[in-house]
Length: 280
Image 1 (cartoon, rainbow, N blue to C red):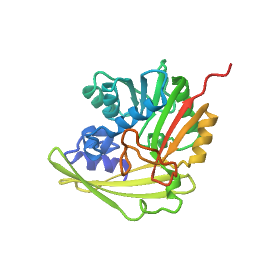
Image 2: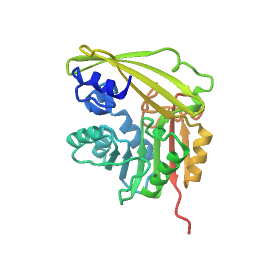
Image 3: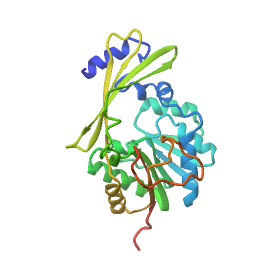
Image 4: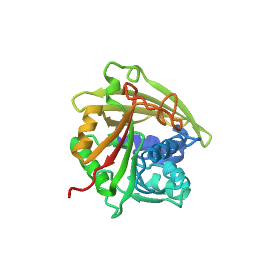
């Protein structure tokens, strides 16, 4: 489906505000699709950062989306700032979390003229950096915004999981979520683009009154543990830990004080790294 036809389909039903991306253009639907009523993601961040002692309590959430995590972290005592490129997400975040600073910025080139004690990048947002140049730019921006000794915490899909595992690639997953009295059904399929080292996704949305499905595509860079260690080392970080579980999106989920699994076989990968001091 062309972009124009996708927008036409979006405009015929209850999701008339939808444009290029149904979920990011409708933040409430996003939170219904990916609920976190117990604030597992923010609890994971708070607990893991506290274990490793950041220099202070200033935190930057890159790819903050609806602001749900940044808002909860502010309640836990962090001076939180969030950045995102979606105007709809940022407007929603500002309404819901007025005590948090939200800024429109690209993760590959943000410049906030400020420094933080921790930078977080959750829910595979880092993997929207598809090229090595994108990844290098993102990590350079993180380092420039961290105080010496500051922490970078990222949570993402694990490229190593797909070495021998096909369970996420077999067939189409179907999910229905109610929003504003309407049942939205998504049919999602994933496949690997080996040449580009990307996990590609096609998601087709349908709902009562839509004349045809709204088809949208996206992709994540697949990173492997040793590759990730090299990127962080080159960017001026010391990797403190890489683990596959538990985390906010694993089963069983994160719990405070949980031991970390470093087999790195799971489908999620969690990274914690410390910014090295500037050279003398």
